[in-house]
Amino acid sequence: MTIDRTALGFGNTAPAIYAADPWASRGRLFPEDVSPTRSEFQRDRDRIVHTTAFRRLKHKTQVFIGPDGDHYRTRLTHTIEVAQVARALARALRLDEDLAEGIALVHDFGHTPFGHTGEDALDEMLKPYGGFDHNAQSLRIVTRLERRYADFDGINLTWEALEGLVKHNGPLLTPDGEGTRGPVPQPILDYCEVHDLQLASYASLEAQVAAIADDIAYNTHDIDDGLRSGYLTFEMLEDIPFLAGLMAEVRARYPDLEATRFANEIQRRQITRMVEDVIHVAQTRLKALAPQSADDIRAAGQVMATFSPEMAATDRQIKALLFSRIYRHPEIMRIREGAAKIVRDLFTAYMNDPREMQSHYWIDHIAGLSEAARARHVGDYLAGMTDSYAVNAHRRLFDRTPDLR
Image (cartoon, rainbow, N blue to C red; front, top):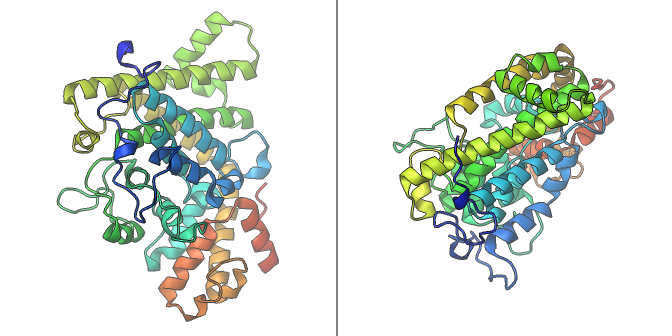
């Protein structure tokens, strides 16, 4: 693998011609005066950080429920690690770092309490009303549910930030209008009626580096948390040639290293190799495409920032290991069953008596809504909960709450 170091963005402040231009943004749904001190994408990033949704991430599960220990990743620490990797990739590829960082910071806003367990349970309860998708919920949060400004709901992000949020994992529609991964969630379709995010095209390269940064971050930190928990051992990591090679490299250089430092040395090498792999692939594809604008990236017909075939195979092997040894571990599954019950019970209770949603700002209007509209508000309320808030809400309404320890 050869990286063109002369093309890297280090020390070169000039953005690449294919980078998103904050001074030529497609604008915001609600026009605002230009800031004299910040670019449009800097403003997006700052608004994201100051939301209540961002603060709530600190008490939402990544893999391990909060009581498991103070050192495990939460949804917030995961998000910060994704943003760091995304910004590093953006700098190397001479992209707009603020846009890449902003998309990384907002990408998990729509996650429920208890991680993917909570999302699955809420999707199950909302199936008769259109289902639940955390990506669509993130869009609802930043366009409707955050209530900070006098002139509009949401935080009025730029078109580019919203495009990156919705399409960072690729187009949602084929050129023929078919969903690329099944039906497009209705909240996304509804928003595009008033502010078209061009669902059939790829997103900017800034959004693409945010997406691959997500994979790099959780592949690495879930191994770290797995080792800390004891669900993973170094012997298990030996089954993956890429990780076995990293461990051999560390042992050769530091033969008597303690376990904690040994794990960290593996993980820092893992991040470095994966980041360099993405840079190499992106440079190769950019050279072949020779894009002259960010729109050329959107029309390229392929992802530009991704893993090589070899690293993609490693990525699949790591995910398989994490699923078998952590995500599907009997103890984790026991906790997941309890967490899912909490979400299902709360949904049923709130549908039966919406007045129990004591802090929901729509509480005075819910009684007159249709069942489907009421269900969506219940979904909004539940999705916004932190793990601890959901547990406490369940204890208030029910005699017996599952033990998540």
